Image 1 (cartoon, rainbow, N blue to C red):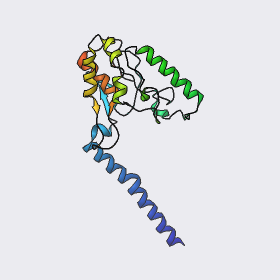
Image 2 (cartoon, helix red, strand yellow):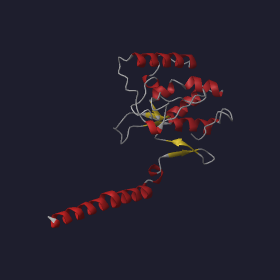
Image 3 (cartoon, rainbow, N blue to C red):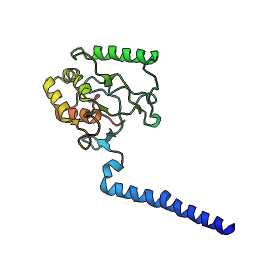
Image 4 (cartoon, rainbow, N blue to C red):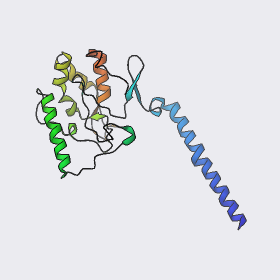
Length: 202
């Protein structure tokens, strides 16, 4: 009995060292060498080197001079420690009321936009942290952003087109636009709309 117990303890210890220490350290080390930016969270920095967010986590933008992301049900909105969806079904009255309110708000804020409102602008992602919009969701906001910045809509639309990310490996997923990177490109190429409105660290 003692012999079998000793073998079991040794096997458990070796497994713990290999899978709990050696493997994680190896993978972390390789990631830091091969993909340091991604391993550190795909952080995004402004012109001053300040971290203003991550490519992987959505954040709110309320200023009309910036593109707005899709809604979030994570905590109080875009809360990375409370990632979740609303869990409301398609027949939920609360969901219908929230979508109707969002549609009304978007139409009011974007009077020059063409109907209908793109679906991703009124539906939250499962995580509540999706940093992307469809190209249609971003293009729908071009007139508002251009007007708020006092520039031609074609210039803003060109920036949207330049920031469309294609399918991964050419066939996985759908084309998309990272809202934070698009807003950062706006400030870099068109200037910040005002000192109080510029992108700031979260």
